[in-house]
Image 1 (cartoon, helix red, strand yellow):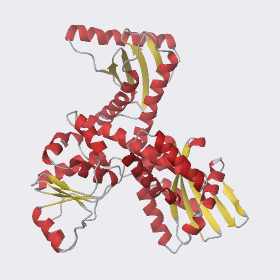
Image 2 (cartoon, one colour; image 1 turned 180 degrees about the vertical axis):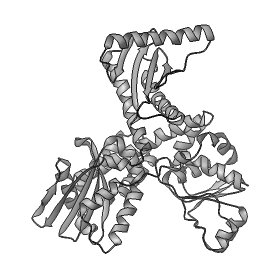
Image 3 (cartoon, rainbow, N blue to C red; image 1 turned 45 degrees about the vertical axis):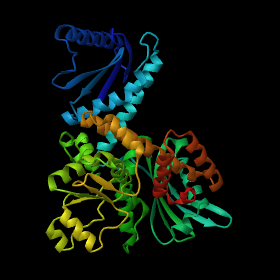
Image 4 (spheres, rainbow, N blue to C red; image 1 turned 120 degrees about the vertical axis):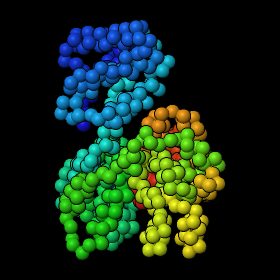
Length: 467
């Protein structure tokens, strides 16, 4: 984890709050006052504000928001921070703090209010750090037990581990009949447990009467990463389920904890090579359909010349930061002749000639979204006006800022998705009522909330009655 310290000061140098809190408060007040004076001096003498100060073991950066300055001290003695990581860290703090600080009066802000703002910044930083970890599942705490089902009710035996989440998961599995729905195959279920401020990944292996249940309990900060990695973890369980060996539940859980995070596609691309404005120019008509299909993980075929196709596919990755997306950038003639072109890859590119050949042999389905760059149009069944409007307002910003703002909106969908999984902790009637109330309270458009519900059922099939 990064070693970061945040201080919120007024533009006149008055320290409002620091996190973590300084042992020597007097020294901290003097330091922040001096740094604020340096910012003012730089602006007065050089007509531009000081952005950062670099030392041999740390970097101090400054972010001004109206009447406030956030001082960000990143210490890289033990964990060096790359320029790319530092830029992402600063963008995260900027995007987290601006909505809370804009319009606030520095003369009336309390120490408690200032502390809460910095706390929110740290929460978003923790999420960012988990998303960048090579093995983020190692944060999962293991527990497991045998769950026996009968007409008289359910009973837990052979429990290893502790926590209120264990009987809550047991109740959900028995009440929603996991022992009947999952009989004969190992399954994976995600459940949010708000009362425990955690999210669980449960493994269920049942014969109908007895269920072997394993649980990995995660902090809330890993929700986005857990959602993105769910298909990877589910696939691992599917492979183990098909093998003849009888694995112990703790072996399976430890295998999942050691899973590597391949990262989303955007994390493997030089973001400076992307161009949101080019994407907008290249697709004049129905860009919203391309955006929707990218967000939900539907198949997208991009047709045109290779360099343009690659740029479009790479830029669309901005909308896939929450999922693991399979990409085939360019289907060649040899791929087609050898039958090696997988058009079921979530996003794949090709020439017009290859596309026509794929159509002729019946490999292109009507439900697939196609982006024809020669005609500058998209053919698709569904669209996302919500994200298209957002994209139109930010497309001329720096690409890294565009990606972060899209990420923030994707996080809202994932947060809603994860929260909906908690409705499995009550019976069907109560779950339906909670889902209805949450839908009425949510700020998400109806169509987006509906998609969040579908995604929740995808990661917790016991909630299929919500569809």
